[in-house]
Amino acid sequence: MSIVITNLVYAYSNTTKPILNIPSFEVQDGESVALVGKSGSGKSTLLNAIAGIIAISQGSLKVNGVELSSLSETERDAFRAENVGYVFQTFNLLQGLNALENVMLAMSFTKKISDAKSRAKQLLERVGLSDKQTHKPRELSVGEQQRVAIARAIANEPKLLLADEPTANLDEQNTDLVLSLLKEVASENNRILILVTHEREVAASLPRSVELKSLNHV
Ligand code: ADP
Image (tube, rainbow, N blue to C red):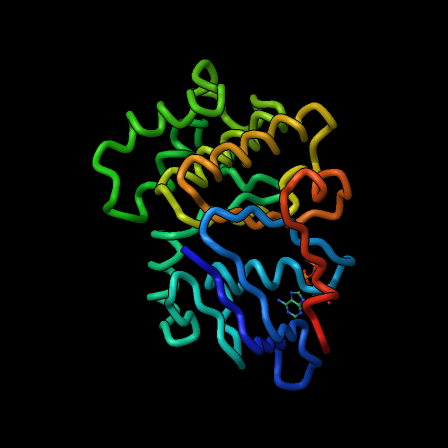
């Protein structure tokens, strides 16, 4: 797995100035990178481009050698289900489903996993929540909700983990817990982890830190 960006330009519309203008950015297999930069500098937009949620209009963005802009939206959805685990600031768990069901749901988008229920149980155990399987998100602390979201993100064995401000809603103790968990699960399968954060200490805890301003030569 690798991410190779060359001369990427992205604007939300034809009439607005580009949000992203990145001459060159590479992330290699197994690397964990903190992506920092001022609010509005395009960090979430870049994550969404790497995940194939949005298509870049100019330049090249290759993930695992695949030029994402050459794929159709449906192909990008399939690519994402197969390769990408996403962790959000607000967890984005479905409120009507319990922890186990939230993790199982992620596995319904690929055919990779044959026994979703037992795998979901293992994943919840992996994040230290085997006793909370039947709890709905509102019956979990915010730290626990984020751990469910991490279990969900790795359910399909993605090679790429993208985390958008995953600790911004957490206190110090849960920040440490969630960060170590993310780093651990990233290292387990030599995954790439790209973690957007505005928290200096969180960025400093990762081996490489990149400021979007320094990439973004608008
Ligand atoms: P960051 O994550 O660094 O705070 P974002 O990627 O969220 O930055 O946003 C970068 C810029 O793009 C901001 O100016 C924001 O207002 C704009 N933007 C974000 N999403 C959209 C959208 N869907 N349509 C138009 N502009 C957007």
